[in-house]
Image (cartoon, rainbow, N blue to C red):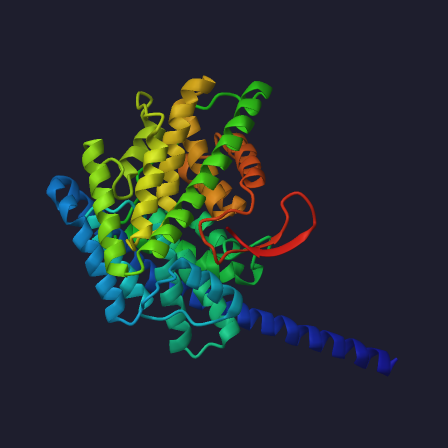
Length: 429
């Protein structure tokens, strides 16, 4: 009897110690999630405010576009000055999540200044891709300051990515999941779930306090989800998958061609800048330069807005040339622009609400280029509301299936096939 009592006491004691370790470790990650959210959120919010300011300044001084080629030269010089000859950008952060390698602390100031220059002079780039780099760099910096092990530093890198994306885009739910989902397709790093959620929510609050807010794009009037609308959504999502593949292939191929035939980075940036400048002058306005957030918002909220049928192709070309020339800022917002104008134009052919199809197009192309279906679904609901969640769910599933093993980030690992349990373990292409 005594032995049985002693054995039971030992079991409870071991369980209490186990639970105690979990609580202490959980408390540690909650505290560091808050710290990371405050630090990265503040930096990212001011970065977002800076992008908004320089974009407005450029639009009120359109002659700045003529200095775009020289801005490219300055960016190349800036990277060379800090010893970076071949910037890997977001791919470096994705590799660090899988391997535990360090993300250089100088990446944050590099990407912030180069992104501001890119937007000031009219390169067709985004900002959320830059946010992932800023967040990963600052998260790694916190890990070094507090002497974290390499394995634990991976969680701080993801915390930083969640915080930065949340602060810049205003979607904490999607930001928390995106950081865990984007590195390896088919494997979500749930061990970082708590700190990523905490850091994303904290950064969102910090960004709101500092005045970094996104425009409202709620889709309130949504037609009933019927068999007819479901079939149209499936067909449209399939087309969006093709558009996302076209975007990824264009970015990679144009960059590869310029690298092959123009080995000098200064010459490559100069000519890419001149090409974007020439396209801008040919179009006659700067609708395709910068983030294009005004066009995105108009497509979703303005019933009378109509995009040209070829607008998505022009944005793909503008963005591919800008990225190939070394301009910084990221690919995510351009993908949203492409999806928005493609959906707006396609709605006329499908006989659907252009605002709804613009929102679905944004969601689908984002999913196709990032290979992050859960984050795509969350970001659609946070940006546009839950009224059209059935449309978004169907569209994301179809786009994810048909976009194949293509992705905007070549360092992204694809572990499994999308149609079977076959293990692939290949990089996105």
